[in-house]
Image (cartoon, rainbow, N blue to C red; front, side, top):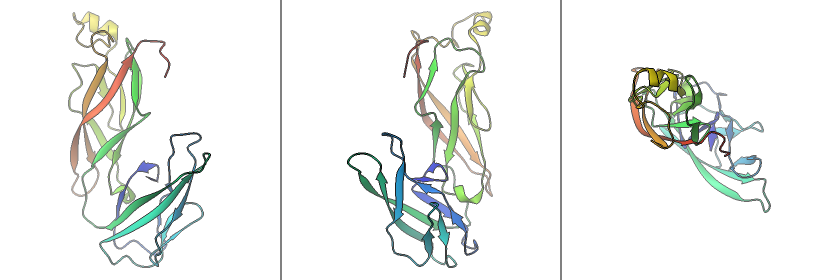
Length: 215
């Protein structure tokens, strides 16, 4: 289930949001075929309406700490297949730390011997406060001896070219498939909530491939 393009199963928003607040768009994702899906709200509720454009709209003030909802997601394949997906809406003014990261594209790949500045991919944070208009800052806990760089906005790139590495007098930062074909990075993410909260995620992995390989 995607909420505003982010894969989430829990969403948090302030309890005093005005009636008519839109949450979403809420969409499904199918890795097969076109990836297009149809989403319908299964839960019978007087608190939310599900619009034709795929948004949840609040109908009354939110007075409970949470609202569990069930959705049906149907793909466009032959035969058409469906799944029931849950989404919990929490009401809270407390900031929550990010609980995960994901990448675009996914999985990540990089060609060996890539030069400085070559983009590997963009990182995004998973946070149940996604509806509170927070922003996130990303940083690398370990750059693998200068191999990689990460902007605060989440753009992961090659930091040092092979030429620079050789000038330093060693191959420690070369992107060499024979020396190492997979990297696992530790990434710290800090949100803009009050107070700002951070979390470190040690499992961002990506593969290196020979130049000219096809995926």
